[in-house]
Length: 449
Image 1 (cartoon, rainbow, N blue to C red):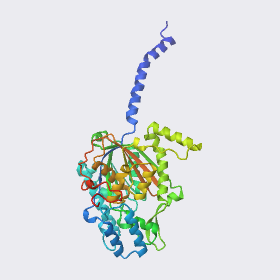
Image 2: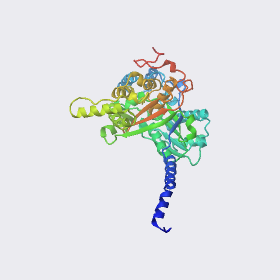
Image 3: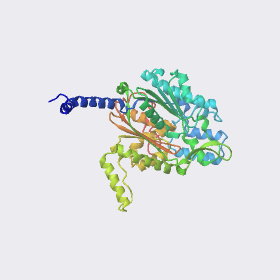
Image 4: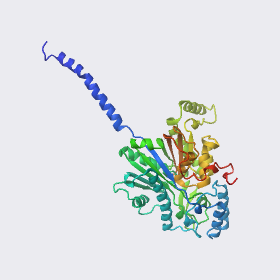
């Protein structure tokens, strides 16, 4: 047969097929490893521990409000009532400028507070892990109500001498859930920038944001917000995996700001006398519950076992047909070993506990954080995680669900998996008095009872 016969060409083509197939396999394997999403590792984090002289005991706090001469008797009585029921104990602190009479709310006071908190937690984190500031590739800060110029990230870059090509972002006006929003920003940036080391800074400035008017909804914030902050070190470098504490598994963001009631539930505004403050709506718990429900519907299928998902679907159908009144609430303890709920106030913690049908032990970290540190805004979730570590409850393989709420209105949640052995003896913000917790049912610590 002639060598130019088409049969010969077909035969040669089939003979070369294994080589083509091998090439496709190599390309597929290369593409998988090159383009697959990289894991986000949480190497470690540091929470600010105010010195004891900054503590504002409940009695001193009330006395300070009284002798400041700023409030009328009705406003004083309301703040005392709220404070006594807030779940905040005598360990919570305020900046030194707030201890002054009258409180110093100047720009310099806010800068002093910011420097004190962030310089301390960043230095602590860098020293502990021998981090060269110039090795930080991404820097994100979040502070809702204090937005100076130069920005907070610029302050940190200047203080620690970071690189000129660092990617920095300063977020403001995003409320108490901005800590997880910052993590989400880093996650998205790391999709583009491989082998990166990121530093996230979360805090709220108390100094410049005290309200001096008579509006009841704006007086609440005076009683619950306290001094605090956190620095979180993240990486998508495989070389950091052996030294990391946690791996990010899921992060879900929910924004219900299109609804007016939700949008206006937490809002900075000016009262009739020209005083600026943050108004907290009576509908806040209801709004938070609505936002969390939407968030959970998206998160549930990603974390819940099929048995829990099936129970939910069946109950949903039965409710549609009028066969039962309520939809089944999945048992999230089958998906998570630990829960960190934003310590925004006793009502918020109670509301989430009831909505998710959790036990008292499940919200212990949140209640204890509220008691000792008060509402530290976006950093509260990290105090709660440190609480679990200090108690020796975090084990390798455990999953923790962080739930944050913030103005807008937003509900942001993150799921972390513990990937290393956590030593409860490692120093953190709870080390000095972890033996005094959990708090008792009436909101007092073991020391006070």
